[in-house]
Length: 146
Ligand SMILES: CC(C)(COP(=O)(O)OP(=O)(O)OC[C@H]1O[C@@H](n2cnc3c(N)ncnc32)[C@H](O)[C@@H]1OP(=O)(O)O)[C@@H](O)C(=O)NCCC(=O)NCCS
Picture 1 (tube, rainbow, N blue to C red):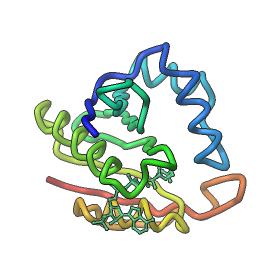
Picture 2 (picture 1 turned 45 degrees about the horizontal axis):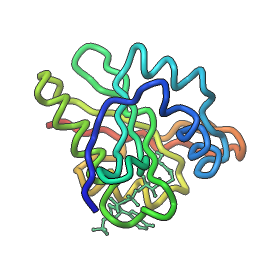
Picture 3 (picture 1 turned 60 degrees about the vertical axis):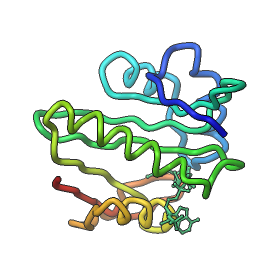
Picture 4 (picture 1 turned 90 degrees about the horizontal axis):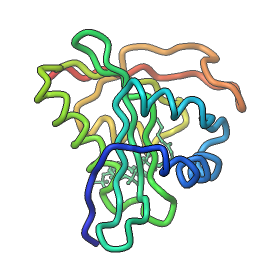
């Protein structure tokens, strides 16, 4: 399947909110995505043919560090390399802007995501106890210096 990555825009939000609800137990609100669209880095991966949204990634840049704040791939497209594609593209974009440090938090039980981040060289640097709600869970803090 041919895919392309583009910036997230307002009209993507209904589909993205639907995906959030399907993929996360504590989904982001529409307001949170509006913030990303207006102030931060937010990209979506779409099927070039029918323009269906496959996944998205969001980030917040502070000085020379990008915090990856959200990443998701639609259930039926998981394990096809699209998560990897999204992370690769946001890292590439930030490297072009001379940003070499990447940071993120992930639920301790989320092995698929942890494995994906480790594949890029992210290392675990700490735990934030009871960081998440619904269900309450520790966050693993991860960092990548390129
Ligand atoms: C985490 C997520 C984005 C991964 O996306 P994906 O497109 O399925 O991942 P990819 O196919 O690109 O996989 C890349 C690597 O991630 C790891 N990985 C992905 N899914 C995995 C799974 N179910 N079990 C173990 N490792 C997994 C593997 O290392 C894989 O490399 P490999 O195929 O060479 O083994 C996806 O599972 C998802 O959207 N989950 C729900 C939302 C979520 O948890 N987001 C992360 C929030 S921090």
